[in-house]
Image (tube, rainbow, N blue to C red; front, side):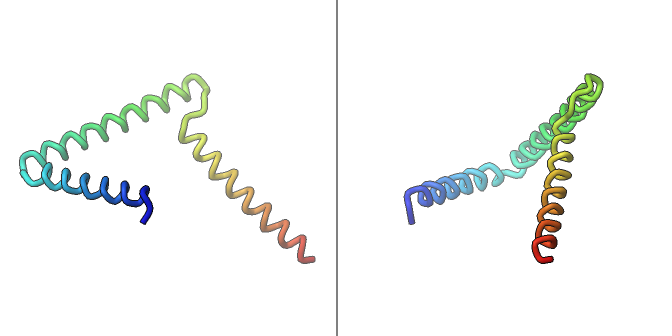
Length: 89
């Protein structure tokens, strides 16, 4: 096992121990879960607002770029398939 793997393994072990200690107390675990939920709701609200502002300014949002990337990947795959078929003829 290389040094990188050992460091990763040790870090995972330590983080697991830390999480076990945090979640050992039910009240603390509940507070952590509530905090995580609040952060997730806040991020969702921020993302929604950001997307609305970007559309109002006629800028592409992150989700627009992701959708375009998926479409481009599908087109590239289709071109490769067509090139393969043409190469066999």
